[in-house]
Image 1 (tube, one colour):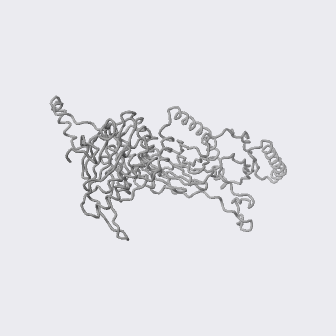
Image 2 (cartoon, rainbow, N blue to C red; image 1 turned 90 degrees about the horizontal axis):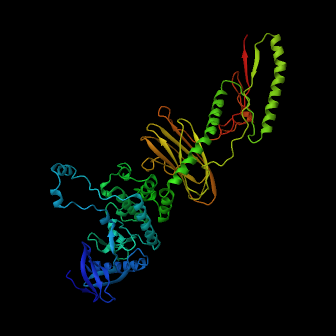
Image 3 (cartoon, helix red, strand yellow; image 1 turned 90 degrees about the vertical axis):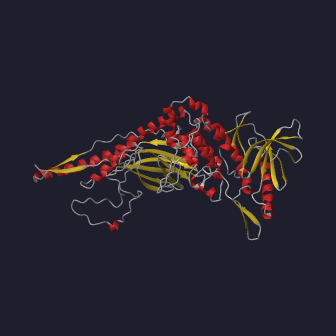
Length: 574
């Protein structure tokens, strides 16, 4: 288009962009004081068909009204004017002085003169990797976090107005020169009438409508490729921009998991585990597994990506204290299990002892010893007279009755506070983690596992579900939003067990059971259930040498309490 004045006021100065949809110019507004610079976009319809032009005009007016509404935000260019001239459509927007993120990340190619100074070996070495993907400049984690927060603030406003950008990429993010803030430009919605592949179809009333896919390959998720974008399609694109800035590679140059379609990028960036977890969830292949809103992304960044070093050390200290406190409990559970197994070969008399009353425990033990002494006083003389084997009563030492310290457990946090805990599991033994949760909070437990082991998980508590993530942050196919799961470990690393509330405001107590089983003995296990009640009328006839539990006494359950004392009677032949 030759240089001219459009609409009698916009004098075209310089062309800054061109494509199949039209052209973009820097212009000056001749009707404003000082003739300030502005941006003029020429949107040329791909067809001269009258129906196409009519539909283009309708979309043009609708999108101009949308841009007028969005321009109220400081980080979105204002729409100054829109008009039609010679069957072409023009948008006039505020000029933003600055540099695009694309130009900021791009590494310029060496000049020919520079190559003359390089050695032949260096040039040949460069030619060997000439087919490798180009790697651009990499930004630090702090810089990427600032970009994320800037763009998320804009996206929250855009989504609140019912608009999906659909074309977030480095080219459309401008770092404004005056304050270094990121400005979001070039809303993809207005391109529906520009694409040469756009088709007009008739609806039930005979009215024509466009069908077109808008977006940029690599930054466009699968549902957007199918023409059904959602709000978190923009979240996906922004996550890809952050990964591009961290790795230096474009999205199409990064590999994907052939089984799940998930992007593999973590090994190509220097990034903390917290930010990596947030970005991995932002770019999930399926939109239901991503963050569903900008608010959730901000919560994830606040929880995982902005923890200071002091907070990390404090968290580590809590985990160590938790391990020390839970050690005696695990020992008690093991002792209870051993006592349960030994009951198959010898007669035991369980005695219930309230752990909170020392005097009650001593009274019960004293009474029990008195009964045993009376029995022994009558039985021993008779056995001696009849030359029968003597009876020796061995009483176990009285266990310490001092209760476990009532200091609050480190992992008993506020019910709605996030929990991110690293736990150490002993092979082939169950570990229990009690806690509580309110609403849609998220609690995570990280477990170090080795290839060949089997990770067993189970959650008790209404309104809670668990998901197991592998070291790359990808959910295991058989452990997504379930109550329990058996996960075979195929790769060494840190596996995350993520607990998620499914709504409500009631405080829900829960208990998470975790165990790691070696390959030699790993067998799928069921969720532990309470033992069935046995009616006294259904009790089997006792036989010699077979212990029969009392019908009124439930079967002993391995719980983290003190093992009951037992009396052992043995017959020794002289």
